[in-house]
Structures are given as structure tokens and as C-alpha cells.
Length: 64
Image (cartoon, rainbow, N blue to C red):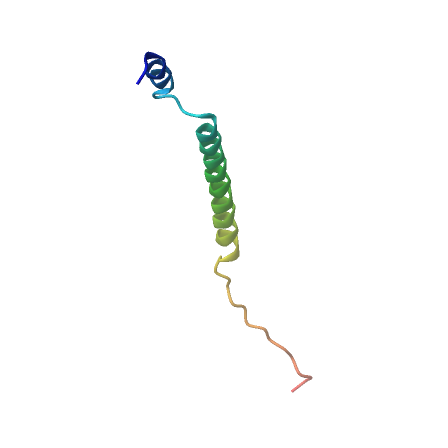
């Protein structure tokens, strides 16, 4: 192995490539999006699943 190869290997060691940072940013955006979806879904389910009070309907059928 020549001296030039050792220098170039040491220069790249420990640094993230551009594609890794793009993947990490995309993953972070996806996680944030999913958190929004879950939060909105929970809010909608809380509103939709409220217990309702059954009311008796009284229908008059003439004068009896």
C-alpha cells in the first residue's frame, strides 16, 4: 500500500458521506410526519369515540 492511499483513507475515515446525511434527513422527516399522523389520528379518535347519552324518543299517536 502506498503512502498516498494511506493518506486518502485517513482523510475519509469517520466522515459521513453525502448519501448517508440525505438518508438520515429523510428518515427524520418521515418520523416527524408519522408523529403528526399519529397525533391527528388520536385527536380524531378521541372526538369520534365519545360516549353518547341515549335519549328516549316519545312519539304520540293521537289522543288515547
